[in-house]
Structure formats: structure tokens, C-alpha cells
Length: 207
Image (cartoon, rainbow, N blue to C red; front, side, top):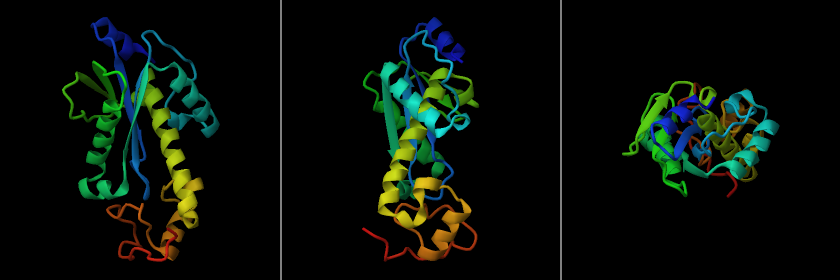
């Protein structure tokens, strides 16, 4: 899991950051990215793609990563900007924000997926990077846990959508809530959903 990191360190790079995101697909809420710099030679057998872990495992590993990492950065892009620029550009913006939030500037980036970030820092994209690179996997955990916590906060503001359970994803329960209550201010209006595309913003949502 750390072969990409070892290769980068072998080329003389000191601070290698793994970058990943959470929340590209939901109907509501932000897209959240994380950047994680792990110590050279760091290993942890339980760190893996966040999608392969239970919420309890992710929460435990989040604390481990926060403790062991050289630096962790978070980037958040909310629904209005997602609607304004599209989800791909919003995701790349969140990734860039996460890198810039690192307390120690990285000199090499390992990015999950196909798309580079608009930074001059040398970088490498890795398809399925969250299951192939340890630092990218760590970033996937940090991004997922951070986003889930944000959606739990939004649940307190908009309990009728049950974000506590669905985290903004298009479950049947969530879609039925949109049909009943309309869209809230954190719903992505550019994400078209059959049967609710023309619903007005609900003016009676709690403040």
C-alpha cells in the first residue's frame, strides 16, 4: 500500500501528500476532500479505502491518522458552488483547498482518480488510489469521516431529510422527503432527479 510513497521518497521528495474526496454523488451537502502527509516508511495494516470500512473502523482510524500524520488538510465545497461550477470542478477545488490547508507544504501529490489539481506541485494521479496508496487511503478516511460529521450537523438543522442516516445520498427515504418537503438550501439543484426536478425550494424549512 505504500509503494507509491516509497517511489516518491526514493526520487528525493520529502513530504508526499495523498489526496481523496468524499461526497461526489449525494443529492445534498458538500463535497469534502482531504490531504494527508504520512511519515516516510509509515505503515498501518488497517488503513484502506474508506468504502471498505465500517463507520466504527473509520472513526477509529481517523483518530489514528490525525495522531500519526505529519499534516492533515481539509477542503470543503458546498452545494451552491457545486451547482455553479459542476461536481468535477468542485471536487478539484476542494482537493486544492485541502492541499493548501496543510500546515507543511507538500513537495509531491498522490491524487485519487484521473484529474490533476491546479497547483504547480509535482503530482501523480492514481486510478483506485484509495485502495492502492496508503496516504490516499488515509485521505479517503479523513474525507469520509469529516463529511459524515458535517452531514450529522446538517441533520440537526434539517431533521426531516434524515441526513444522519443517508448522509445526503439518494436513498428512497431521502427522495420521498424531497417530494414531501421540497429541497433545502443544502440540496444540489444541478443534480437532476426524476419526479422532483421542478420542485420549488421549500420556504418552510427550519432556520
